Amino acid sequence: MKINQKIPALNGSVTDPRTRRYLAPKRVVYTEGNVSNPECLLQERSNQITLGWGENCTLKNTPGQPHAKLVLDYGCEFPGSIRLMVWGAGSKGGKDDGRCDIIVRTGESVMEALTPLKVKNTTNDHAIRDRVMNVGFYSANETNESGQRFVCVELVDEEASVSFKAIQGVFHYLDLDYEGSFECSDERLNQIWQTAAYTAHVNMQEYLWDGIKRDRLVWIGDMHTEVNTILATFGYNDIVPRSLDVVRDETPVGQWMNGISSYSIWWLMIHCDWYRAFGDMAYLEEQREYLKGLMDVLASLVDEEGVEQMPGMRFIDWPTNDDDVAKHAGLQGLLKIALDNGAYLLRELGEDAAAAACEVAAERMKKHLPAETKAKQAAALLSLSGLVDPKEINEKILVPGGGHGYSTFYGYYILAAKALAGDHAGALRDMKEYWGGMLDMGATTFWEDFDLNWMENAGRIDEVVPEGKVDIHGDYGNYCYVKFRHSLCHGWASGPCPYLSNYVLGVKSLAPGKYQVKPDLAWLDWAKGTYPTPKGQIKVWAFKDAEGKTVVNIEAPEGIEIIRD
Image (cartoon, rainbow, N blue to C red; front, side, top):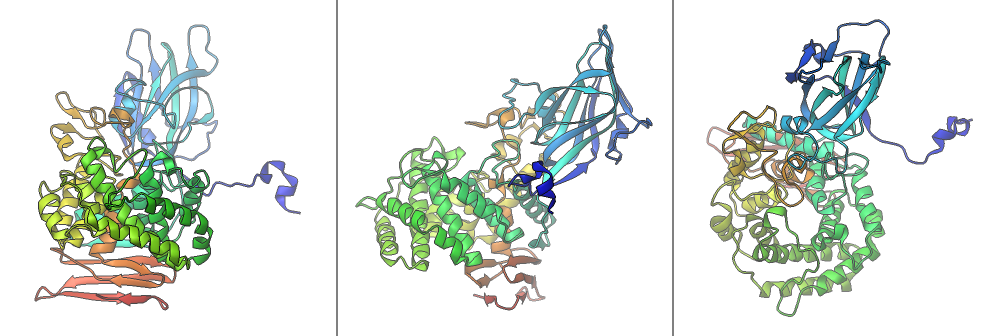
């Protein structure tokens, strides 16, 4: 007899695929009031509270004195919870019952962890990150899930004390092997690849989220960059089709995914990339009717003059949200790409008439060239769509300002457009400047939004911001991510990972079972790595010989066709 026939609680049909790992803090950032022996919290301790007291950290409040508090740093941002193991607790004033109240406040930056609710737009939206917990002696108390790197613990009662055995981070994650890898002669680029891969990885929870603190939702547009990161890092994972399907099933054809018309395009684009990578015709067949309906709608949104007429919320990314010229240019390019990709998938399904309608609409779009825009995001989409000359767009719009004008969401597409123009060296320089800027500010994951200008006179996110410095987390942001509501771990910012794998290592999926391997080292001395396929890893080792010529060694699994040019 199976165990679930004996225990009713095990009859639930859904299980959590994630692993829990306990983390000890790496650093005591800050203390205030009467806090004794906080360094003991940095030790790895057993996960069981015991009767025999050992070394502990005690917070004690005395009337008229500042409340005892401390801030701990776990060394990197992680999704999950905080676990407080309490040996002893008590409060005076006639209610000493072995319990006390503590505030537990998490943050993606030190200043967020130190800042109470409603100050600088701190919120409990999507996940509670600021709460009062009543704890007692010999207890282990766990918060709800959120995304954080720092925790602030403050004793509330005016005359009270609490002694901690441990304050652990509880890391919730999918325990996956990194089948893809990237390494090159530039250590900053290696760090960027790893951080980008980790940013997407931690957003792989029960579904594929956009952020681990906020919004913790399946946003289809955000997913396109994340999926390309997953393809370069992990290969197949069923979190992708599950996430695609959950949004499809709640969005009838004629409505727009996540309420944004361009996001239905991104659903299509992900399916195209997924099919090229895995050739799963059975899964593509499941999309047949929805895909036909969607492509019929998208083809109808090109008028007789070849101009896109995308309805509803016209969205490219946040930095261009108030720029109608940029939005039109970007949507013109994005719709053209969608029609080309949709036609490809429809022909794979044998839907030739529907594919032809997409091709006619895509051809008609060549009649219209949007007004010039300075927005790099929109220019990149026009370049990738084939509607403009990539070299001209790169010289006029993408090169000026270097990493200025990038956005975290559209960074991958800007870099890809530069590569299309042959400016591989410029792409790497911009990547080091832009994503490297976040690393210089203390980032361990990449952010929802970032502007290089924010770095001027700014304090790092892993420090108490010094007097006279700008708080880069608490003083910036716009739209839905004002100040501390800003997510410092957003999967759409992971674009450097697939870029370095697809363009520097040079591995691109062309069709099921068929890959181009064409490294471009720019000014690098060498690059090496692996790229996952359904048949195993493609291994690439590219280096410059004594004459400066690039030598490329490739190992590919049986059944994988390699195209070298």
